[in-house]
Image (cartoon, rainbow, N blue to C red; front, side, top):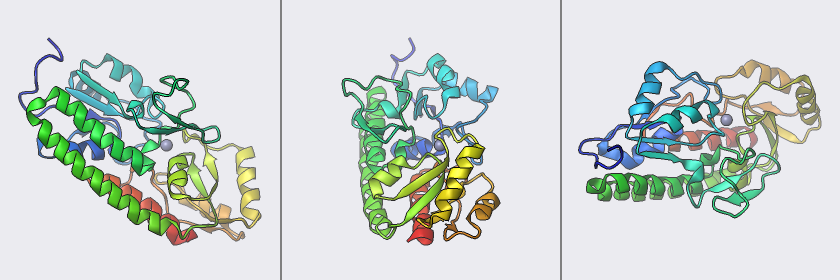
Length: 288
Ligand SMILES: [Zn+2]
C-alpha cells in the first residue's frame, strides 16, 4: 500500500543538505519543518550516515536531495527508501545544469544529457533561477501526494519564488562591482560566476572538495604572483590561515571564508537567502 494513501497528518520529509532543507521548508511552511541529514558544520562531500538517519530515510514519506553527484554516499540509502516521493533536484525539468569541464550548459531533458552524467556540477542552487524552478517543483511534488494541502504548498512556493527573484535582483546590482579575478576554495562556484558574471580565475580544489596537490598549489601561487587576482577566499570549515599565508607578499588579498553549502549558517527556511547574501557580500567586500 506504500504510496497510495494520502498523507493524513504532517508528512515526514527528509532532505540531504541545509540548503535543500531551506528551500523545502519554504514550501512546507506550517506543514512542518523537514529533517536534514548533513547538519551544521559537516562537509556534505564527505559524510558518514548515522544509523538513526538511515532509519529516518527508510521510513520517510518524502525525500528531497540534490543528487548523487553532490552526495554519492546517499545514493544507495535513497534508492532503498520506501518514500513514495523521492526527488533529485538536479533532475527537475527546467534546471539549468553546468558540467565541470568547461562549463557547458545542458538542460535536463535534452536528448544527449543522460541521467547521472558524471560531469554534472551539483552546486546548482547557486544559480537563483534554479532555486526558483525547484521551489515550484517541490510544491507540485508535494501537492500530488497531499492534494488536501496542495493550495498551501503552491501559495508558499509562489511566495518563495518571488522572494528569490527579489534577492537575485539585489545581489546582481552588488555583484556588478567585481571586475578583477578571484580564487575560491573548491570548484563550487560555476553557477554563481555564470549567473552574476563573477570572474573566477581558479579554485584550489575540485568539485569534490578533496585537498589540492603540490602541482595545484604551484599553479595558484603563480596566479597570485601574476597580479591579476584581487582576492583569494578560504572556505567555511577549512583553514583560513593557509589562505592568508598564500596571499602574503602578493597583490591579492585574503577574503572572509565563503560557505557555498551553508555548513556554518543557521539552518531553517531563511538559510538560502543568508547563504547567497553572504557569498556575494563577502566577494564584493574583498574584490569589489
Ligand atoms: Zn561542494
